[in-house]
Amino acid sequence: MAACLSFTFLPIHSNAASVAEPTSLPAPTPAESAEAKTLLLRLDEIKATDKSKLNSEEKKDLRKEVKSIKKNLRAIGSGVYLSGAAIILIVVLLIVLL
Image (cartoon, rainbow, N blue to C red):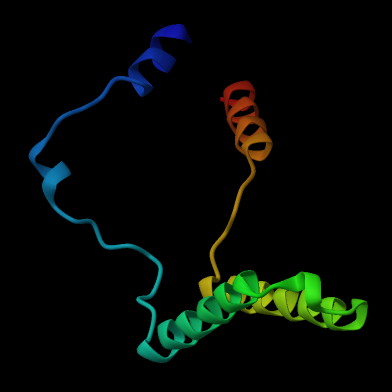
């Protein structure tokens, strides 16, 4: 079993490594990337504002806006995110089952 694991961590050099592999994710459309850029610009504007002069209601509105912008950015990305603990759990389960 240790030999199998050691082979999985050895780097394998080949000519195919320099060729760009196609991904399963679709390329973002220009509308999505433009929307994402505008959302990121708005986040930068909010970060740059002087919040010490705002009252509590305005600060609450800004927090809600930041949360909604981040939610929209995650929806645009539509990727699958795994935590480190989830990856370790998957690896341990694969080792035990195989």
